[in-house]
Length: 336
Image (cartoon, rainbow, N blue to C red; front, side, top):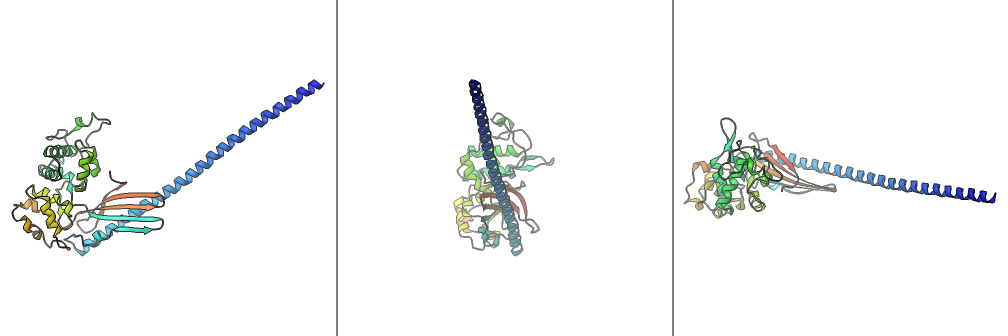
């Protein structure tokens, strides 16, 4: 009887031990689940907060576009035929404080650049074909900025083939077979370039060359030859005038003329061309026609800091032929 009771007691103690271990395991699992749930909730709250901050920052950035459009329209009303660096669009820049952060904006002349899409023009079948005049100007610009003659021919040819409608390479150009063998493989779009950063994907344009040329290039939504505003052109952009006139006119000479420009800009185009520095240079009328006093496009760069959100946006704005400015395109994120 005693032995039987001892066996029963041992069995009972063993069962209680198993139950205790089971309970402890359940508690441990529940604790782990609770911790995981708390982490998920905390992460969800954090993510929702970040989304809210980023969304609000995006709205602030879009609001800066509305302000820029208003300023550009105001500029057009003040001076319908002339754009200068003394007008509201050029002076309304800086950092604006907001609750929880700040908005930094900067408007710049978006026409003072070489329009890479001008390397092609449309034929009677609405196909993009090479524009010989634009390619010549582009090569002049490249060489004026330290790019060798051979390299300038390669770069101008590759960009032309990137845009034109056919698959036949122009001299020193690059078509499908130059890209399909890469990793990853891809093909030229045979369409206008939408953003200047697209050049990084084109054969022959390395990072060093891209970095040098990027401030002088743009991708406008047309194939027109570049129209340079001599009242907003800065001395460091002087090679853009060399580009359209030719190698006979050095960028340093143009920079000198721009450095002596009146604060309110040149009164007429003739006042610019009659500068004594240009006296010995023969300048064709077609070249003169590419120089303007009115800006057709502006670029707006916006940086918004709001809470934990950091948003950058670049907008291309058309001044509008009728004085009503409008957004052509926008890109979120810093340019490469």
